[in-house]
Image (cartoon, rainbow, N blue to C red; front, side):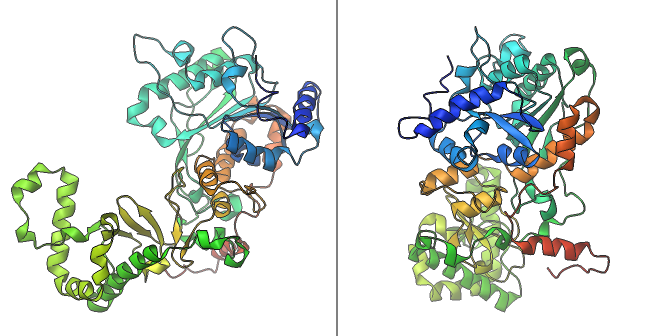
Length: 497
């Protein structure tokens, strides 16, 4: 039996108990929404944001993580009138039993950022039989029984990589067996390829999207289709035009800003390394090289032991050789720098390593940094690396602080009024890192609908194609759109840098 009723809606939140009951009744009645959708492995609502933007109505939500579910409810469910609230479930396996009906209401679009689980490689099993026992099978059960017009799945890029060829083949074959026309070539896309006006955000986040249109098992098995989108900039947008400032809040508006600011030790690490950046520029007219600098490995190249190098992995021996040559070429600068910064020797080993990926950026304080176990990494303050569900939050050098959870949510394309309401920052960062980039999801979904208009419900097509092109609203500051408009003018000239 589905655990929908007791799940999150407990005695401390009685009004949501009523919401579930009314949502079940509402799901049985026809409503005025252009289409209805189910949001599985829903996280904090990235798919919800863009499908609502298109005029859809959410009729079913499933998210097993309690804190993520609380965030979802707070932002997407509680603001709705009770008659329009979706059924909320905690565990999708309870709604998709082997020996019973699927307890998910009818819907037109199924969206799921599903976990990647391994499939068995024993024997010659394929398709639905082999998917059984994985969470993908639960999605397949719903698709098999409800046959929504469109399925939209999202996963990490590696699911379509060489180590997961078998899993990928099972997923594609299963979808085709059910009746979905899907491409066997993955659609890989990242939000930083989209201009601000189309919902882009300054984050490199390559994800695989699987999109299918229900056409029936016979037709689905016979036609190979190209991927929905290709990985690359859209409408001539230059990814180097991004500016991390566009997702930042004013420091004065951030509560408890002190907990995001750099500590005394972290400030010291950056100051000392930046001193080397400035000395290199003054003495040599160049910034630091792009390979990892390991200060503990700064010895003359002649002092390297060839036998020891041969015993090391190739990547490591190459880094040691590059560091030795860097030392030989700049030992006078390094010597003076070390004399002026004796505290450097007391830094943790990982903070005596620096990877400069900021090209000609003038100072470490002008970069975006990450304090990684492998060292400090510095990048140009344009687009950021993918948010991840661990504590390597980006440090904005110009602000001398980390991104807040609210800013991280905006980096995923969520609106400015999105809130975590006093939740632990660790949980908020994890939720955002596990989330779906709204702009990227919207781009691939809208493109798929546009390509499949002949086989999709007219109301769904009209709603999606008539919705504003930008699904992220005020996630970015107005300066982002202003720059894009400036660059699109016929008389515009390339910006410096």
